[in-house]
Image 1 (cartoon, rainbow, N blue to C red):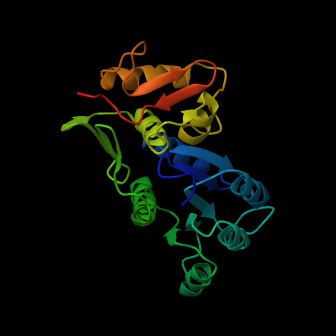
Image 2: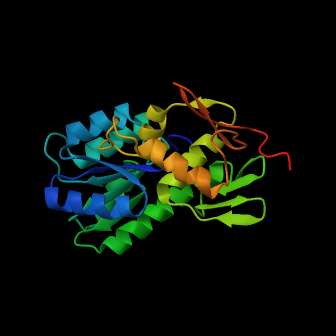
Image 3: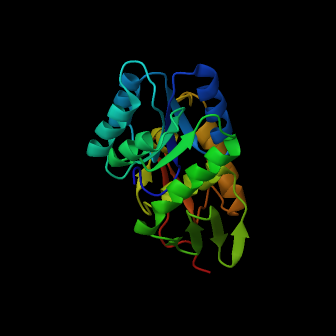
Length: 235
C-alpha cells in the first residue's frame, strides 16, 4: 500500500462537515492519522500529494463527483484502499463503483463501529503483501496485530509510540528526522514546532529500558533525528 507498513494515514473526502469531523475524531482515537477534504478537487489534490493507506469517500461531492475521484485515484494509486460512503443503496450504483475500483461500500446512515470495522478489514487486506513481522535485534513488531515484543516480553505501546517504533524498525540504521515522523505517524494538524515527537520518543525509550546517553535501541543523531540501532543489545 502506501507509506510502508505503519503509522496508518487516512483521507476522508466528505462535504458534510459534522460527519467528517465526527469520523475523523473517532478514527484518530483508534490511532490513525486522518486528513479531511470537503470537496472532490481538494480530495484529489491531497490524494496525489500525500501517501495514504485508505480513502474514505462520499459519492455526492461538490467540485468533482466521488465516482470520478475514485476512478482517478485508482489509476494513479492502484494499491490505495477505497471505502465509499453513499446514500445510494441501489445495486447498479454499487456495481459501477466496484467497476471503478472501489474496495467496499457503506450505505448511510451507518454506525461508526461498522465503519471502523470496515476500515480495519481493508487495511488488513493489504498486509499480506508486506513483511508480516518486523525484527530488529531483540525487537519484534507485528503491524497487523498492533503488537510489539522485546525478547519474549510484550511491550504495551500507545498508537503513536507503536507508529514511531514501526517506522524506525522499517529503516534500521537510517536516520529519520522529526519532520518525517510527524508526516507519517501524525496527521496534517500536527504542529511541527511542538516537542510532541521528542516526548513520544522519550516515552518509547522508557518502555524499551533504553538510555538516551548510552542507547542500545534508539539513538539521537543531534540536529538530524533518530536512528534505530540495527544490532540491538548484545546481551
